[in-house]
Image (cartoon, rainbow, N blue to C red):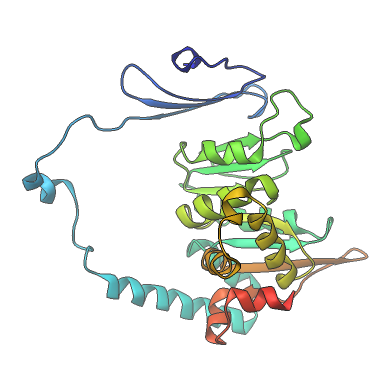
Amino acid sequence: AGALRNQNVGAEHPLCSTDLPTGHRLQVVLPPAVPPGMVSLTFRRPSDTVSALSDLAGRYDTSRWNRWDKRREQRQADSSGLLELFDAGDAVAFFGGLVRARRNILFCGATGGGKTTLSKTVTSEIPRHERILTIEDALELVVPHGNCVRLLYSKGGLTVGGVTADALLQATLRMRPDRVLLQELRDDAAWVYLNEVMTGHPGSLTTIHGADAPQAMRRLFNLVKGTPQGAAYGDDTLAVMIGSAVDAIVPLHNDAGTYSIREVWFADDAARRGEVAADLLRAA
């Protein structure tokens, strides 16, 4: 596959995206970007035929093409149900509802605060039929799904291959995921995660440093703003983009071995109070 693009594919260059003579598109991921003994091959076959417009009704279900009112009603119903759980303080049902509604969740806190532990628990609520891709620097996440690919990046470029989280995120876009779980949101992955994953593959989970929701939002803003793509946007525009992508921020705290969930920021609750993401940024 690498020869088709004059790429050397192996431990030092474990990622390869190419087109095969058959017309298939192929994404290859080799160790160390996947666990030892594993090879990930994703084949996609674009159609090479052009159908007549008159065949449209037989090829596509168009029953929902003018149902924006129903879409809005469903969103409002989902929001009302989640707000009831949020107001009741029913954390178990609320987190389960967020997962089923495919909301994007940021878990924040200090190192050792329990971010990864809770993200594992919430991950277990994702329906088993979904295709999950994880991006980690160590195999920490526990994903019970049969259709799961674990992608590994090099922390600080210290290992053979030197694959970055950003490169893996770019690869996931060619691997047909239902959800992408990023172990920790860092600078080199911030733009791709915000612009491609959180908006294009809703229901994503990740962790970020920050003692509370305002600090987590500020860190996310700074990470995105620090990328060449994010720097091209004005602060107000960027705040709107982030606010539309993040549905919940869950702060975790560890006080001498006693773990707690602090003030959760829920986008629907903020909207109910007439607040936007920019207000959270100003509170940081």
